Length: 144
Image (tube, rainbow, N blue to C red; front, side, top):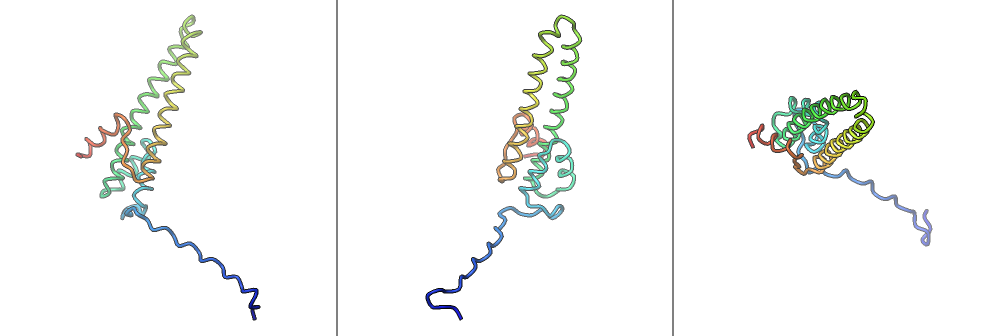
């Protein structure tokens, strides 16, 4: 028996799972915000979720934006590598332009990664955010 001055401690109730404010996709079973965030992975994530998701316009927007952004990243990467090779192959210019171009290209790549992370965070929080240039193209492709 519990002593009147020393009551038996009652354990705190277990926390209930937070209700999801986002609809679930019938095709993937994921909440829309999670599917959209995964669709932000440039090119690959976009292609997978664009093919799988036919109903959810939020996910399809981020998937199309990712496909376009991934294509832009590929073009920028190819041009950057070509200019880097050219800058390093010219004997006198490589001393000045080689390291300079390599630094500029690294900053551009970092900027593309930052844009991808911002898009993923915005998608996960349920906000529709357009990557400059890729977002309006995605909207136009989807007929919005």
